[in-house]
Image 1 (cartoon, rainbow, N blue to C red):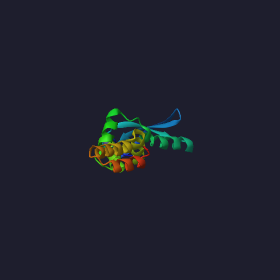
Image 2: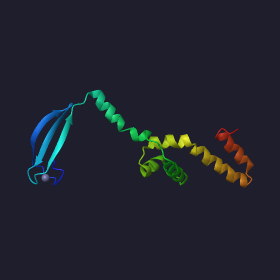
Image 3: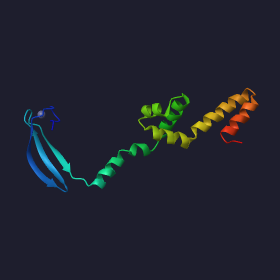
Image 4: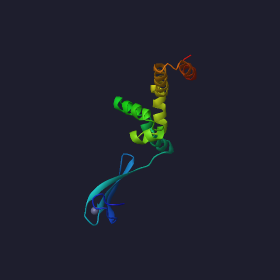
Length: 135
Ligand SMILES: [Zn+2]
């Protein structure tokens, strides 16, 4: 184990005892004499799986209004879900779910139709509406 103070590998255990269900070790660095504690926790397979699931937590993390705005902006800029995920620190799956939830694809289609309508391209509007189930 490396010393958190000076990064030296020369450390020793100066005390070891059980605290609750964890093994607490007092360690000391031989180079700088820094002292710190480590805890070794024995986990059942089930507990470990639960902890690993916590790692997926960011998928379900609540989307703030700012994040939704950023998502919408990036989506409209034409970024892929993967790229948006990288920008926002979310997984691709999470981004995709949110896009569906906010109906961004549908909104984009409707906006395209709006533009077409302004250009009086009625046939295309009707085709577009059929495509997104608006008719
Ligand atoms: Zn040290």
